[in-house]
Length: 433
Image (cartoon, rainbow, N blue to C red; front, side, top):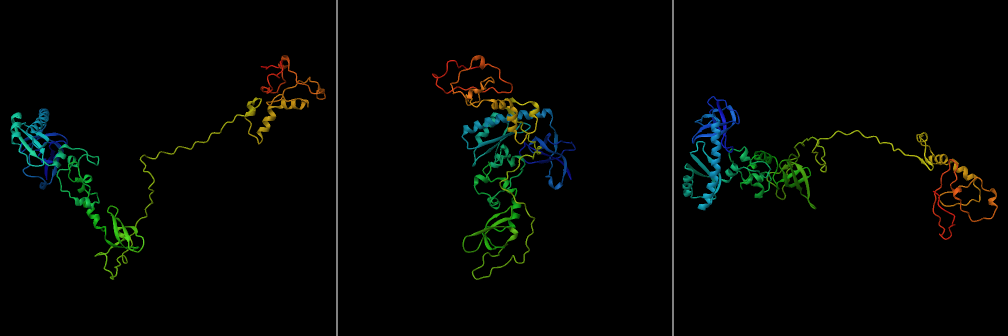
């Protein structure tokens, strides 16, 4: 076992092992290490730990020191130089008319070398460009051509899945990806859907390839001739993840398609037999698969995004308070608190108008109704023989008589305008307040 530390340069590269020389290094610290190009600054991604000797590439480089404040100031100066070099190099490329795209600039820790990364479709003659850059920066210039995958790894970005690029986050090496992987996973072969931002096939197609290869072995291919519990047929579609398939059964008439699991059918070796040959029966001796009963799922139920809230106690309906009123006004408090009887209307009318009923009984038979709203009160001093006399037109009441005090318990009748013409109205009749 060898004690090492893992470091990464510029946050987009492989992890390299270095000998800490007995110095404890914390994860995330900036360190200065010895490399083939001299001293370089790197970030420690994993502190002191031990690895197998077979994993270490000899000779193992050593740790120079943990970065100090002076080293951090040098890194800030180099970062500013990289930004200036990026702008100047792009201007020089346009002046020389070169078909190349500048991607990134990297300045060494000691400041004696500047490395330019670019992409291009073909070979580029940049000898004149190197001379111009060397005369400007007065240091060693190196131009390195990279591929489109390395460009996406350096620049980073967001993929179609909504997450950062895998190559920029955790991938250290690029593994080959083929279209066959998309076919095995039953994905669309549209290049726009299976290609990444770099224009190549997405690296994530390789992540589940091994699992799909194992599932494919247990599921027949589309077009295979199989035996089912309902008869023989041909496989029309396959769902690899669910291990289910659709079979078109043989027979005359309308085609019949049924769903089966992979362990419920048997693939006929050699395909459909020739006419006249007997059909093999492979399911006869095979035991039926035993499965746990599944609860039926309702496709119309929306998924619950929040936790279920506790049910609130049911509110008791409040009783409606009904006010009982009589024609003569409100009832007293004792009468309002009495329970409701079977005939409230009858009691109400009997209690509200006792005096009015007595007046009706005392009224002479020849009295005439003055208007529709009620009956006119007749004085008790009226002549009782008025019914035997001939009818005469009603005389208007004098003001003193109209304002006479009414007996207690009687209700004041509502006055309404008479419908007789204005010309026939008696002169002495007036409205009383």
